[in-house]
Length: 116
Length: 115
Image (cartoon, rainbow over all chains, first blue to last red; front, side):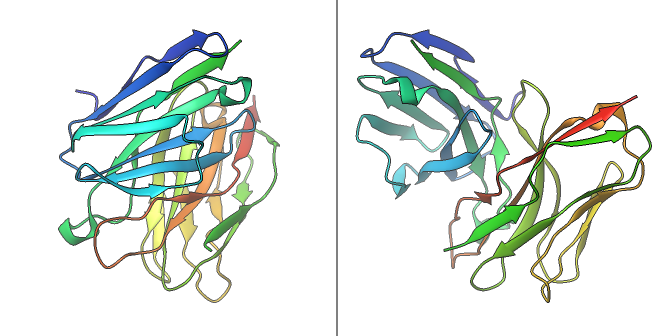
């Protein structure tokens, strides 16, 4: 079983469209994240959720709206897509420090978004 | 804020050569340190970690030692293989009182090993 799974793996769409990426983890972790990796491989945190609550929102445009229906799922919806949104988006999860976590993140395989 | 600086790539080595990828950090308190590896077309995998000063993380022939005095966590391998070709990321997280904080990543170093 895949620990952190994201769908879709590839997404090609036109500017102005709205799209969603889904993420699920079966590790029992309380914290989930979205990272953006640009064309130069730089990884930047976008959002962090702990037990369905938004903890971190790192100056991401409000066209990006994360949603966590339960602690095992964290979806990312993007409105009015722009060329600059083209990137690989990674979902990750971690076990809380209070439950023995070390800060290690477990990553999904990524979702490559191409905006034309 | 916390930050990680790692050597710019790309790094190209011949098979069986010695590898060093430098990583230094700036953080408040005592962070945990990590090396992640990203193979082409894949997600990030944890390679090794160290959670306190002088700890040595090791895995698959790779090693890194947490040096508080030099705020460094350099990655080394004695003899690289073609299969080690990937992008390597140094990262840190500063412990909160509870919950978690996201990893802060360096910019990544691309390693190419040629036969």
